[in-house]
View (cartoon, rainbow, N blue to C red):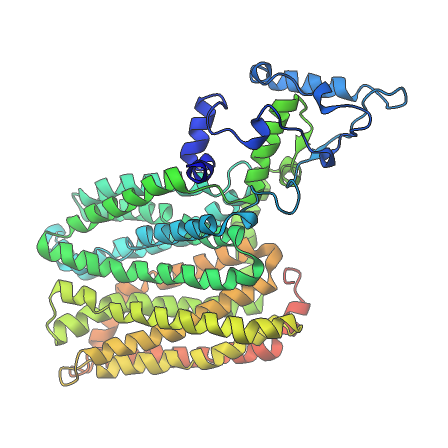
Length: 558
């Protein structure tokens, strides 16, 4: 029971109960009567006892900010020469030593693993939504009297929405007064609510509008999921944790068409959104009660607030609060919009790596059009079988993750520890990058009636092995090279690849149909994509040779 209380105390539900009860329920250790404020926060215990400045808990709850300010002034009047208490301008609140149990890095293993599971569950619950309705596309065409391209616009605007979202949500989650949970839970609540007007849409314009907003609200796992992993995992294990989390980021768009196919065939396309509402509602309830706040800055900010209340001294603050003291809308806009774009287009390494990940994303979204052409048009699958055809990607990502984690642990980390530059990770891409054009060609030219349907599915699995590995190489390299501006770098990557890939489903079907040939309906279209992917193989080769020199000239890189 104590473990559950400890888990729920810093969840959104726990914080709300704590606030409504006036601090009587879900109390923290520093709210107990026998708690003593640590001396490392600035008080000289030889001159004054803490009891001299700690006021009664019941009384202090009634004090206003003006009262706290007056208390601070009264404590600062003495100069220390006559034995009165003399205090500095600020007490920087930090952890209570290296083994502080409130530090997410010191949480029990079960608690940290539960947080990882919750973030992965959240990721799947919202990213199922991107392509969940695509199996019912023809039903939308017939009901709203539009063509295929217009019916795909809701997918495009959803992808653009969750590309824009990290530009706002990533920097907001870094502010000590907000943290991770006040981004995750409200946005997930709105995501759940928005499924109702989506499922009840009366026309294509309404569907497009609601899907654009829903895509924006689905972006916090993409914006902050990696940061949550970094909160609870040590730097040595972070790459492994990010790889594990990335599995779920890929599985969402895979399970979406499967669920959409089932409910579109059994009911209709609207039921795809009802099932999405139920899944995301389950995630909302689970996370509302059991997802603890993981941001160290936010945990310490709330500790500092409790100490200000307990002692009546307004000088207790954290480093993050002090850094954000001069926070302005102008600086927020710069952090959200200007810096990610500046880094993307002025850092050659970042620019070309963003192009690479954007291409992989684009091929993935092209396949939401190619798969129906191949498996419905050629192999005559029904909608449920069409959804199952995406599971080659699901299996491929599991294989890729296992291989990449082994590579990180047994090959990359020992070399980084010996002092080799981060560009060494591009050697991993030498094996993965050629898989992309090979797999695209394999898929395209095996998609014919005379070849068993499992062959193009194997091709899609090979593609995701290479694509997943390249993604991990890119993200780990950016993380090692731009640690000071990681949120901006990742936000720029999210925006770039999402906006680049979003239009591809709109013209993918026309590209495949017009390029043909009839016997291999996605053959020449796949060849075009494969040629671009083959050119991209040069990027890791060039960055292995020149990456260190480019970083040395950068004002942003490490």
